[in-house]
Image 1 (cartoon, one colour):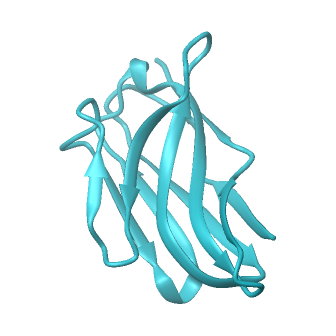
Image 2: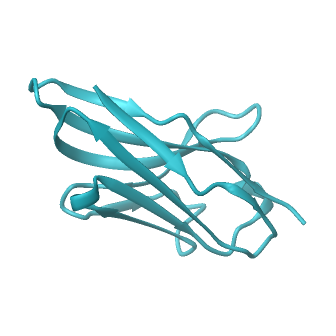
Length: 120
């Protein structure tokens, strides 16, 4: 079992910045691609950014140039630095990880979500 715990959400004014963190724990043998998704009210969950174990990144067009995803392998943690935030970035942000457990079971895990609100 792999647990993901997000932190760093909150209320910020337009143009401001936030940094989200997601720490993975549990019976982890390897962590593969990790990522951030978000879901705004009455909208479907959408990809924000992903990062592979080798460091390759992928971003939604709406956040390119403003958000940066990174990871710390030693800490099993993925980060999302969000700059120049806009009201349309308001959503619950979810961490996602593709992992191999110590029982050699491949699984995809989700965090509980953290609220990001961009408003003046």
